[in-house]
Image 1 (tube, helix red, strand yellow):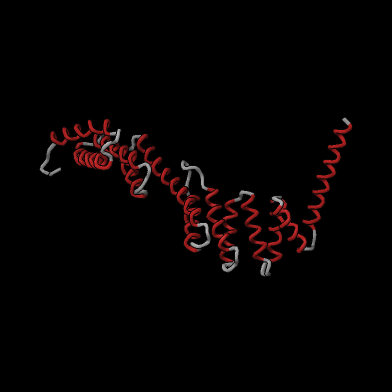
Image 2 (cartoon, helix red, strand yellow):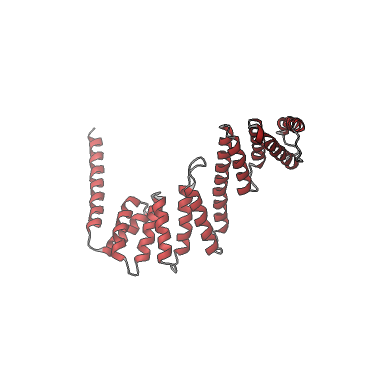
Length: 270
């Protein structure tokens, strides 16, 4: 029991000593010493100690030769602490403030990476995904020879896949809600925005079903035209995916569409 008490006493003394040392750094009037310690804390991954010091030193070193160094460390500390929105803001501001600095290419890259880290899952709002794509594309355009082009392209591809899934899931939601007119439009949007989408077969299948169900439930004055549109969608699907397992379900719809159009012929050619 005495040994345990002794261990805890030593631990308490150590913690108090460490806190006391940090407090001395914070209260010091020697800004060069504070900067040295802030960098030391950063490199030791003690970001919670480094960040307040860099924040304080921003004002002290503004307009001096060390301003860029302090500001870049400040942005890096925010990034390391996963404060990605703040990090993106400060990296961007650093790049604009110090356009010729050796760290500026890295700052542009880190803007995109910060937004990438903030990008949520596909079902949520994708504002930061769009910001990440724009920022990474800007970096790729400005610094194509920095050696990160493949990595950046991979990040952009990953982000675009998330947007693609978001658009597809929204269209599928309209379909599941039986809002077939919105579903047809939304599935068309999937293919317009992402011509090579991995969801193309599914999107065209659900678009055809939605078009058919929309025609089926329409008022008489709109029914014929909508059946024609459903037939066009079905024929397009069959032309692109002639071996699709979905045709087992879609082929009978073609016969129903044909029967309706034959029964409800007009002077207009279909």
